[in-house]
Every structure is written in structure tokens, then in C-alpha cells.
Image (cartoon, rainbow, N blue to C red):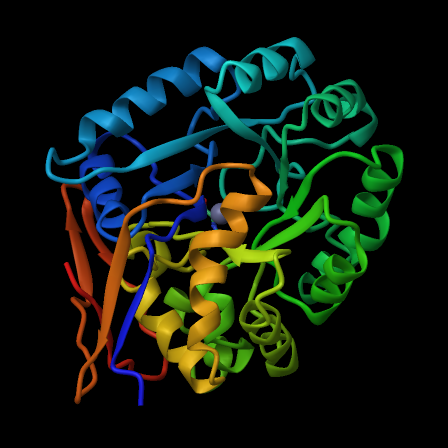
Length: 347
Ligand code: NCD
Ligand code: ZN
């Protein structure tokens, strides 16, 4: 039985760090395990300009403890006013690694996102030309569409058109939640990929809803039924270069989640690798963990593979993690699935 696993240090291809008082906590929590992360731009106000991305990057680096290393890969938040020249400049000079597209109203702080997809045509054209990846929150926002169907409908309507109009554009469908998305990504060309989160691999909608509502399992896109979760696990452990880890670790204070209108987001930065090792081992796929966490994403983004390694060891007993993270603003609950893991990352 494997008791020790050494893998290339992972990257997180979808991460929310927030800002100000939370940064010293969130940045260092991710930096313990991850070398780099794609930093989501959904701050208030959002990161829509290069000057904002530059100063946000600076604040992130300032919050990093001197004994840790971490590279934030910045993104711009697409609006209907995004200037193609701004995107071109930021991507070509290396400040940004991708542009993030939120359909307006799809999720936390997405109000400034896109309503009319015709308006972003010139930006998408330039992105296709220069090879800048588009990260997509893939859900429609039409209130007539059932929340469990919003990803599938987005793919069939909005995304398919974007990809047909821009056949060379690099697209990442983020935090996929359905078998439909898995099949769509597999059927696409090599310029189409998807990130999968820790929590979508670990829980289904019964975990969220049966026996009482669990606000700390609520995220967007919402978790789906078990056969969809199994399709995601299958995709993750397959080793296919089209699937890689984007934790979507998204801190919200407990009082904002445990409320009559709770915020969406699971905080998984602390124990993602331990949870993933358990899931991959269950599928006899520990040898594919490194591809999912450390190789496939870097190759899709055309970045170097990290040179340093991390070690995971398997304990005789389940490992326990802190339940909460203390921040100057209040507590944040650390994601805890309904199973235990014996794996632990060695510091
Ligand atoms: C994210 C957040 O809180 O910023 N929430 C979430 O449920 N995933 C936004 C997002 O990625 O949808
Ligand atoms: Zn997210």
C-alpha cells in the first residue's frame, strides 16, 4: 500500500483571495501547498483595469510571509466595456494570464459582468489572436432556467456560439459540475479545458440538502446529483490534459453563510490536497494526482511546470484539520466533506 507520495508542487487554477484584512490569511493558506494560482478578479469593485490588477498583485505579494513563495497569476474581469488593447497589453507584458467572463448576476460580485455577449466580440477576437485564455463561469442567469440546469444550458447556447465564432480561442470552463460539461470538454479540441473543484469532487446535492441545509456546502455552480459527481471524479482521475484543479476556494465569513440568504462559496485552500489524495486513492489513481494538480493546468496555460515538490504521507488514523480560520473580520469555516482522509501534506 502506498504510504508516501511525492509530486510536483501543485498550482490552483481558480482561487479567490479577496482583499485587505483577509489577504494575510488567504494568501498564506494557499501558499502552504500551491506554487501559483489564477486569482479571481471579483472584488468590489472588480479588477477591470491593468492598473487595478497591478496594485492587487502588489497587495497579495505584500501579504505573503517571507518564508513562503507564491506567484499570483492575475486576471481581468470582463465587462461590456473591456478594451481589447488593454487585454492585449496586459497579456503580452505578462501582468495578466487570463480574462474572466462572468455572465452578469451569475455569482458573487458578478453584477458588472456581461449581459450582451455581442459586445465582447472584439475582445474575444484579440484574445484568440494572442493566445490569451478565457476563463468562464459557465451558467446562464435566466431566472426561468432551473438552477440545476444552468450550466448545461449555458454550454449549449452561449458557450457553443462563443467557440464557433472564435475557433482558436483558448477556453476554460471553470468549476464544472455536470456530466454534460465533462462530455462537452472531451468532445472539444485541445483549446478547450475545464477546471474541477475539490468540493465538486467530494460532495453531491444530497450532502447539501438532505437532513437539513448545509450552508458550508453551498457554492455556485451548485453541486449536482451523484452521477454528475462521479463523472467529475472520472474526468479528474483520467489523467486527460483537459482537466485540472481549480479549487475555487472562496472565503465568506460564517455569519454571511449561516444566514437567511447565505453566500455561495466553499473554503478549501487548507485541505484540498489531503481530500484529493483520498478521492484519487479510492479510485486507485494516486498516480494521476500529479497530472491533475500540477501538470495539466500548467501545460494548458503554457507555463513552466514547477520545479519543487511536495510530499504527502498516509497516516494510520484520519487526519484532523482546524474547523475554522480566524480572520480580523470573523471566522471562516474550512470545508469538511462527509468522509475523512488519512493523507497529510508535509510542511
Ligand atoms: C465564488 C465567490 O464567492 O467569489 N463563489 C462560489 O460559490 N464559487 C464565485 C464563483 O466562483 O462563482
Ligand atoms: Zn470562483
